[in-house]
Image (cartoon, rainbow, N blue to C red):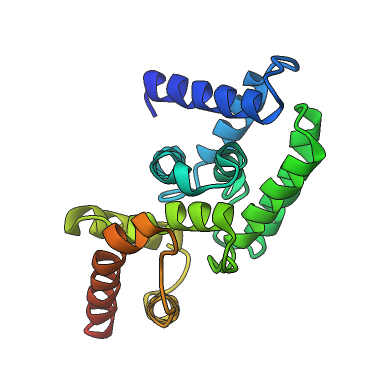
Length: 217
């Protein structure tokens, strides 16, 4: 990540955190940003990197008008993969617990902290309840990569494989195909009006194409 990209992310964290705590500038938001950015830059990551974080934040901004509390969603985006080890389970739960520990220390009200942790846990299933506007925004923002152009989607799929390099090829193909079939089996991948209109058709085509490629290997 370049220095300018790092600086922009620190600024985005500062803005979201200060807004979530009602405009208070203390305690200093930036040490929390640096801790999170260090997590997102860990060497085992190939897809779940600071680039993914920035992309999810961009998509949250696109969908912000649909959210009940956009700043809580932005904080949830920061935490949703803050703990990430592809060889371990419960990454989402560990990330939610991190939010529950860090946000009160950072001066965030308890109600906002609870909402952020709830949203992080929701990324296990990406299946928000009807009317859960904040959940719809976060889940759509996280899954929007599925609607990338062909080159970008191929890069995403390759990065996912790199994160699971410790898994033998056949086992990875079986596991990845199961994930793709589960996603394709959902009534809808996206819940926000923008996601349904702009991302759903291309995402389904990308998933079907990847599944066909895996099946032909």
